[in-house]
Amino acid sequence: AQKITQTQPGMFVQEKEAVTLDCTYDTSDQSYGLFWYKQPSSGEMIFLIYQGSYDEQNATEGRYSLNFQKARKSANLVISASQLGDSAMYFCALHGGATNKLIFGTGTLLAVQP
Amino acid sequence: EAGVVQSPRYKIIEKKQPVAFWCNPISGHNTLYWYLQNLGQGPELLIRYENEEAVDDSQLPKDRFSAERLKGVDSTLKIQPAELGDSAVYLCASSTSTGRGQETQYFGPGTRLLVL
Image (cartoon, rainbow over all chains, first blue to last red; front, side, top):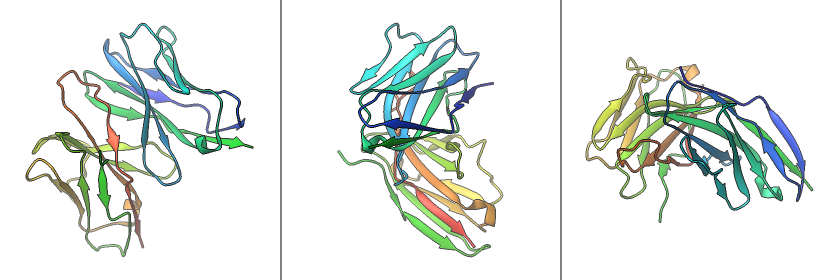
């Protein structure tokens, strides 16, 4: 069975500081992918970053980086230099090759304070 | 490039009434997904299409939900009759299908349904 766990229901961060959103996963697949999405109050799910299970380097996309620790089955999202517009729900998702499905966590609500 | 388009954005209906949602995927994306997102939860897959074919509808409650993608582009999701518990956000997503799996899914803005 595949499972994604996000243990932080909510987080506060000061503007311009870095923040880490936690994500752990469980899968029996050897090949899988991990995704992070941002969902602002408008409702649209915005793709942020992707990490493949065989990728040796941690993924980075602008201010977003993914701290991938395969042995610990964690894929934490790091947002550097937080901006007010980063305030949103953030979802971690797992795509397993065997099931060919994207499984989402319950999300973390991030509030960036000025 | 235009993103995934969904309509309507909001829908309020009375229970037992029918309702339909429409989705137009990103041009060139032959894989289309419908997700259900309940309040405080992540999206859950209802159905996945590869072109016109529904390749995974195991989570679709077939007694009241139906979907179609007749020409392999636009898709419609229908609920008939709607129940109070169907109040949620219905998200459509699309992706390319390279056969390698793990293609990035791009989402539309969703339809917020309220059943009274």
